[in-house]
Image (cartoon, rainbow, N blue to C red):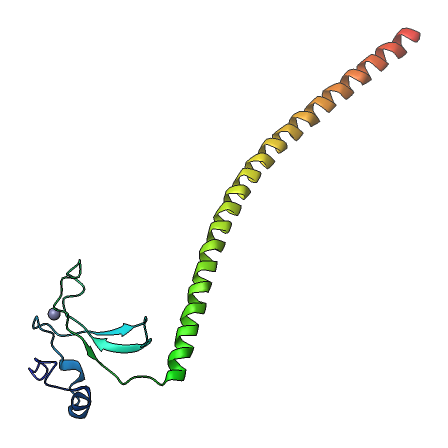
Length: 149
Ligand SMILES: [Zn+2]
């Protein structure tokens, strides 16, 4: 790791690019600065170098290092990216809603399966009852025929 980027203020974006020092950027903490994407605001999709401690320090405790890692995109691209991000957000919300519907349908399906099992049990009982009734009818008819003879 070189010390080429110890000071973000002394090295401009253009100079950094000229010297190809992309991966040696160090934040004020002395950590290697990761390249992070910016998705909100007026620079969607543009990458920047941030504080190297951002992953293990929570609650906004970092040195606040910030430096663009690539050039600004044309306005048209930014508009398209923002529109796609909005559409993506809409689709994600739709997926979430569909997942809730799917969960409810699965619950309903399980209840219906249980009901089918109960009804199949009833059907078996009913068949047994009909068979018993038939036997009784046959028996009584036989008794009547025998008594007539
Ligand atoms: Zn830092």
